[in-house]
Length: 82
Image 1 (tube, rainbow, N blue to C red):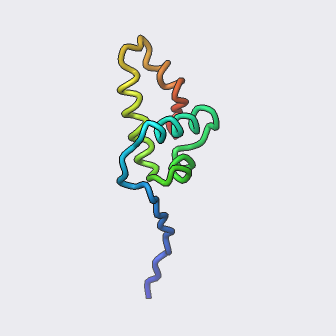
Image 2 (cartoon, rainbow, N blue to C red; image 1 turned 135 degrees about the vertical axis):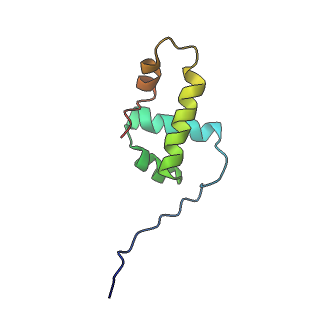
């Protein structure tokens, strides 16, 4: 008899919903000022952790243009990727 381990499936109510500027600002604030992990931010914003990482990457690409130092953008977003 095979037994499967039970996995906890977390429903993120904001999965698939459009990002708002307010959502993005909150996400960046949680990362920069509270040093929350992507997983913690995902739980707080009720989104998938991968969606959080991808959104940070998008914001870095958008706001990193014109910066002479990409490391400056990474520091600003506090993006020591876990």
